[in-house]
Image (cartoon, rainbow, N blue to C red; front, side, top):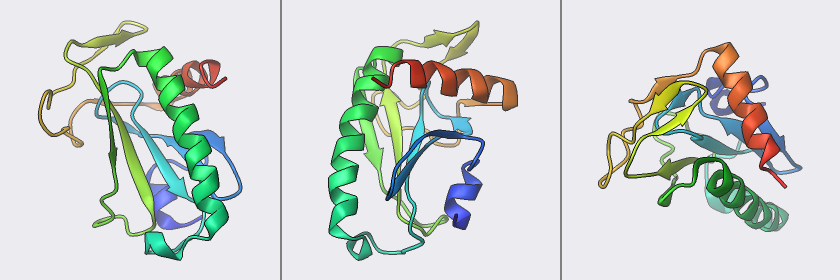
Length: 142
């Protein structure tokens, strides 16, 4: 796997994986349930992905949004494709909400609401919290 996926904790942070994409729990939980949808290919341009990757991506978008809606009950969801620091194709998936959410005694505020998400803020998920969050999201995967 490429460096971008590794930066976001691959393989320990895998929520789900397919042929062309891997869903990772974002180590820095900007908001509760923040994920990264990472292309498995090391390509640097979205247009370089094969057609089949776009089909699989559509299927994963539906699964991600449904799972996070059930888990977090978000008000909005942001899909951010930034690729400045981490160059391989990936999206940050940030559930957005006006009032804080709680998970197992930990409070998760959306510090950027209602404007841009604060990707550097939030809760840093240690190994224990990471594993509990992954398990909880998977239980809503469907």
